Image (cartoon, rainbow, N blue to C red):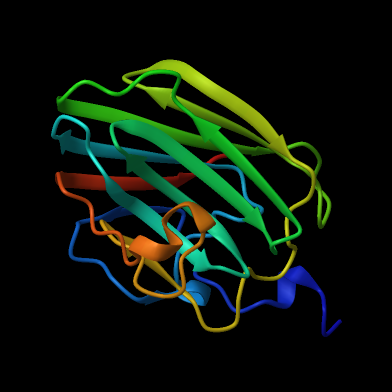
Length: 180
C-alpha cells in the first residue's frame, strides 16, 4: 500500500479561489491538477503582448504551467520530464479582461491514465491535446503551487532563463474545481 495513490497526503477540499498573492503553496496541500478531473478558470486583465506565469504547480521534474509568452497563451503538462505536452493559442491574445479555462479530464479511472487537456479563452476552445500518462502520486517532493509567478524550478523549459517569470498583468482570481 505504500505506493497506493489513495494513501497520498492531500486536501479534502474540492474547490478553491486563489489570488495573485499565493506563492510557494506546498504541492501536497494544493489542488491536484495532475491526475484528477478539474477545471481551472483564470480571471485576468492582460496587457498587449502579455508575458508571465498565470499559475504553476510543480517544477522542472514534473508539473503544469499556464502562462503568456509575448501575447500567446500557453499551457504545458510536464509528465515527469518524460513527456511534455504543450497547448498554445494560434494568435496573440488581445489586451483586456479575459476568462481562461484549463480543463483536465482523465481518460480512465486508473493510476497513470492519460488525460485530455482543453484550453479555452472566453468560453471558446482554442487548443486541445492528450498527455500520454499522468503521475499517480505526485509531480515532485518539494515544489509548490504559485499564482502570477513560478517561484521554484520552472515547470517548462520555455521560460527557464526568465524564471520566476512574473506575470505583467493582473490576476483577479484563479478558481479551481474538481469535476466528477
